[in-house]
Length: 319
Image 1 (cartoon, rainbow, N blue to C red):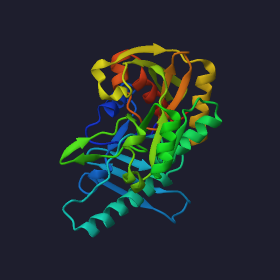
Image 2: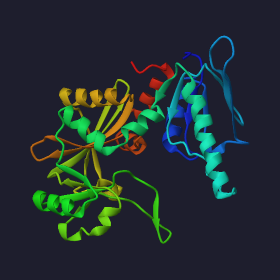
Image 3: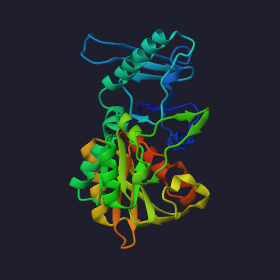
């Protein structure tokens, strides 16, 4: 890591959240090289040499307008990069080329020693499994709603009858369309009568519904914690952003420590947590998104979230 080197920002072409962070970095006179892996070829070039003396990686990443030497990178903001799909190539050729980009470009970046990653993609991938999150959350002392992951319809029906008010949630958000219409997997109520043998196709996540009065979105960025209470009256507040009201909260110290312990265990320096607040004021674990959206919350609350990201990346140090 070098305090004068550039910050790499890997993200899709249109990313307002990344724009906010880059604007803050520009205000601090921190050099930025932004790229999208999907632009590989004419818009993005990577070169790296190994087995040279001294024993260190030598190479660079070049876009149409910027160049970043490897090593020498201060930090990497791995935001929402897109990988190429090569629609103009035959299916097998496209699959082959896409794999080479992931393991070539990705492998070169992962081999760079020193820069701070926000967050490292391998760490994010490992942290993105909801069952593993639930086990870790319970070990850290969070209230975790009774949850079943199964592809056994009989177990699902038995769990729902035992819990009563139960919801279904996807294990991972995935782009999906039905008859050309984009679909989104919300948290939805489910009854035992709705369960049929189609459950056997894949594991499903069923969870006892928390009798909540509000939701809490908590963003941790390095040493900063931003907590926002979201009031909506909705089971899943993402269904209707126009129905939401926001209140900045200060977390109890014990809860803040537990959330930070979660990030440390997962090797992350930032994460967005979703918690439910019940009628007694207790907090229930719902999930962690290692790379969650937060840009709209800064606009709604005025919290300096983008400045916190920029400061972290500019320092190149999570302490």
